[in-house]
Image 1: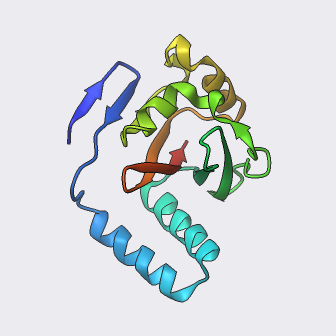
Image 2: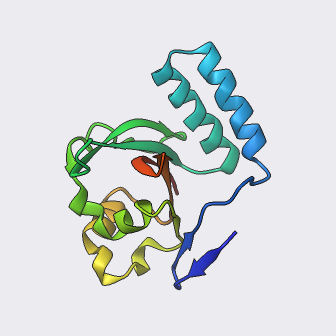
Length: 154
């Protein structure tokens, strides 16, 4: 895996086969066979979130013009508060700093939300409002086109 460390966050380039990919792929396939698509996505987020021990797992979807996004699915552990209803039709400019990496198909791991660069200030304020300490953002791409983001936070 090619990782560029910039202090309190990391940019990850895509990798071929992480060790857990087979397990996640199998579980995703089983969910898609058992449930309607929306339920399968929710089941998969729960499987991944519980498996990696995060507080929240979510999926964002971009509008076709890439100017806005919405939170389509969200799994929360225990008493963790969901934000799916609050994050609808949000301008992409909120996360412009992150969006540049997502467009390149790169995952971004933010170890410490408090220490993001000043160019990430609007997104940082939203993440802090949600009580996030660290966040992993993984682009969802098809044919080199960005469609959404799957994220995990604590």
